[in-house]
Length: 285
Image 1 (cartoon, one colour):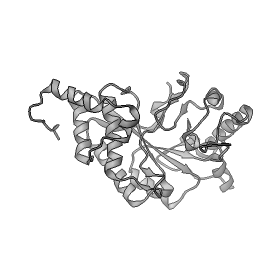
Image 2 (cartoon, one colour; image 1 turned 90 degrees about the vertical axis):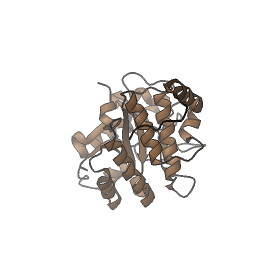
Image 3 (cartoon, helix red, strand yellow; image 1 turned 45 degrees about the horizontal axis):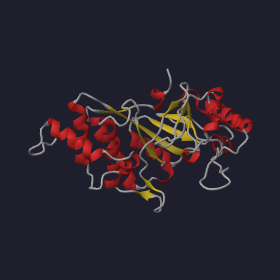
Image 4 (cartoon, rainbow, N blue to C red; image 1 turned 180 degrees about the vertical axis):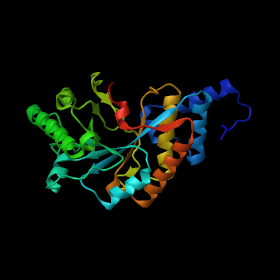
């Protein structure tokens, strides 16, 4: 589909218009433009990428896996070959099955905390606040990595996904010793930069309305957030090398969310300027 021509707009005028419309802070960009967004808008934005021979990479993370469930089966059917980084809670998997869980085909298993337990004394939930003992954290990181490697073998990825997307920067230095080379949280990351041996493999769009009954936020809102991220990258306000991460939670995924993700997979799969990548492709070489 060719990009829509705007009457009276030449190339330079359109670029200036784009920059004026996107000269907003990152937080406003990810909340999306104020006008309603539809699937044609996403395709048109990808057409803009194609015009300059650029490709945007997407990746998919799904959280809170503990055992095979009908919801997980539905996730696999929905993905239909699209790679997913499945965030698995090590202690919950270990305690929930005396023989270990069978490998889940088509999924790369990331370490999702240890017990998904809140250790935050005040404020927002966090399994790894700065007040925790570093030696205890180091043990949990190593034991969790070993647990997933024993259960899933080569499907166990060296990527750490902190519960609630929060992880005290004081503990980042403990990740390499535990065999972990990637850290995945919710962008934007306003903390200090990660060391070169740790890749930031963040997600950017979560379609769950956590403050509104945990249902789907709606197609217009979800697309607006994706479009904000894409435009920020295309106009040079964010490195294009980083993949745009989509976050889902299979245990609470409702039918409207399933329909949205299915359509998104189709659009990305069919457009020359977009591609899905596996999370391990973003790990340090």
